[in-house]
Length: 493
Image 1 (cartoon, rainbow, N blue to C red):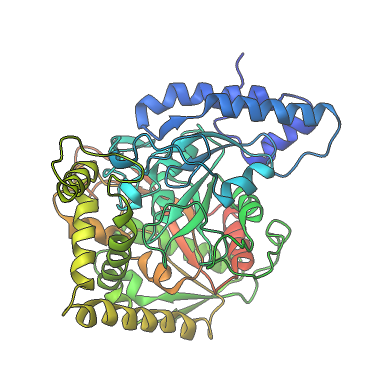
Image 2 (tube, rainbow, N blue to C red):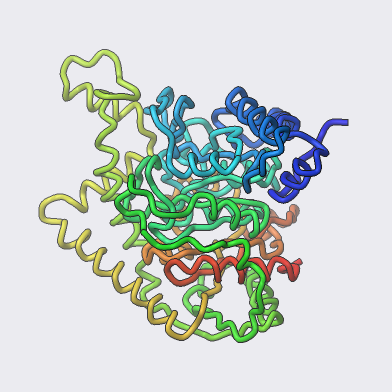
């Protein structure tokens, strides 16, 4: 009987290795077999790294056979979002312009994860250059939700979330610029964390919006996410925005009493646009936290309504600058048949980039142009400061903030592609935390009927819902403890 690791967590991998019940090679082979069965259905992975994975598994087995102490991620199969570079393994960013790009170095987060024993089994599909909320913008096709293959997995880290949810990987790395780890985690029923900006090195993360990009872990449990964060967090001299802040032992701090813990409930997050099914589940989640000893405090984050407009000015402006490097000269796709350098630029970028990336480049170039910089970009930066101040003021009264992760469960593939604004509003609850640079985590919070959320009256499906918990800068330890205790208490059935 073949080994089934589809529901395993990190502790299951370590337990089986330490007890010699199985080997890292057998676990890796089980993961690869699961990929072969599930990836054709949900399209979570762009590249499967079979040879690299089996070689690393063999190295873990040699370590175990010699009696060496196994590291905290020994033998754990992980997927890495395809905007995070891996030496010798292509990194496409979900784009035709980098379809055959093989990086000459590995991202710091991946290096640290592999040093802790993790085994990368594949590069996860994503919206092109991490620009999207549904994983429909990938040049390699959409990622389908494991709970309903006709629905989206969320974006832009949909491949990372779906790979974990479908049992192809035990954990994954994603990136979060405006909700791209937390929203897919909510849609796919897994745990996803966006750490504080600067907590995890961005070295080797292909830039979308440099002041907003984070690398974050995805797992089947809060403890798994804590283990993964412990491995990848910490200062990195290769990243000038990496913070020299001590990294606590996140796992050891998961247990603890929540009595007297004050949780802010922002009224702006429970207004028009929130589906009834999600509202019901999140409110039940708040009640569950109350039973654990937490005190609910109503708060206001008055500048929340400006977050979407603010984000899509700042992020697109930074994207316009960051994506200027893809010109067909140095690496990546070059369009054939150009008669001049200018024509080569135009053809390369016109053919290499997808529609959503072009839209954001054009918007970003516009808001940075002469005559519009002060009216748009400078004003958006001022609003960003006000949004951050809202959170700072709130955290003077509360220890954490609880809210929905997304306004609806996973919607149907194609449902919002014709209306970019409606698509952008899928991240309305995650964008403010991104702009403030604070940590946020999405934890499963029960199930919502798809009826009334894009489904038909004749079809009622149960889809995952996530509750989002937001914390103070560099306070991931308490945020993870809150999420872990919620999870251990059963969350919301």
